[in-house]
Length: 168
Image 1 (cartoon, rainbow, N blue to C red):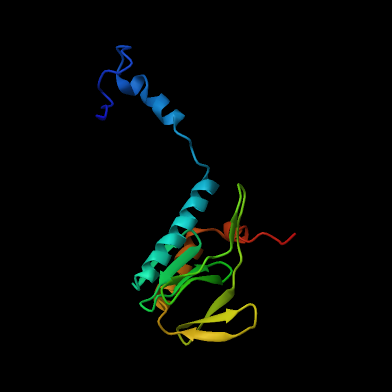
Image 2: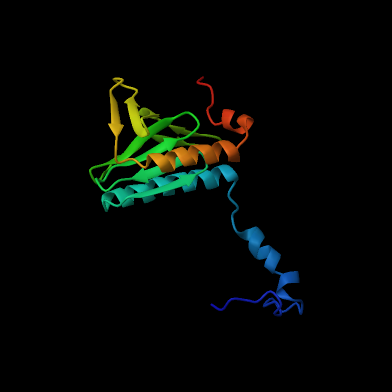
């Protein structure tokens, strides 16, 4: 099907230009996603993308809002939430791990398995379950630190305080 130019006559034969006739209807009839829906779809897409990179044992990293995703040549992949220093592993040795992510129309809940911090410029993870601490020397520590700084500049304190909701 050929694309209709904005200044061409409308195919409905009204005699008007497409931009003044049915162009607006075409946009209205497409389902519009709310910002929350866009974020959810993009969050899971980003998780799947980083898992794919880990399966292929490629180093990669990306950001989405307050989230940072990275994979290593060893096939590990992690999702880090930059405001609360929470994280969850989504691939190990090239194998996909299914993260516990519950999405609804108002919130995204992630069952974070670890918290992270930096020690001597290396990323350190502490497991919530058993408090086991380990350093990850192959993590992109500089990129993560830079992402934290960017997020703190990009979002106000008020916005960042709303990332975490109180537990019921």
